[in-house]
Image (cartoon, rainbow, N blue to C red; front, side, top):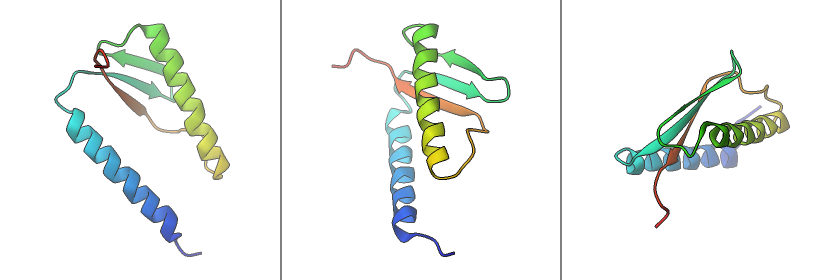
Length: 91
C-alpha cells in the first residue's frame, strides 16, 4: 500500500509548525507536563497554575491523543509525552 500524499503533506506541515513554535517559544518562560505511560504518572515543572490543574489538562490531552490514535488503528500512547505551555498574562 502506497503512502497517502495528503497525509504526508499534513504531517510535514505539523512538523514545521512544531519546529517553528519551539523556536519561537524557546526563550520564553514555560511550563512542561510530562506523562510517563510506564508509571501512568505526570511530572509538572515550571510556573503552571497548580499540579491539579496541570494533571487535569494533561489527562484531557492524553485522552484526545489516544482517541485520535485509536481512530487510525494505532495503540494508546506508549511513549513519554511532554506538553509545553507558554506562561504569561495573555496580553
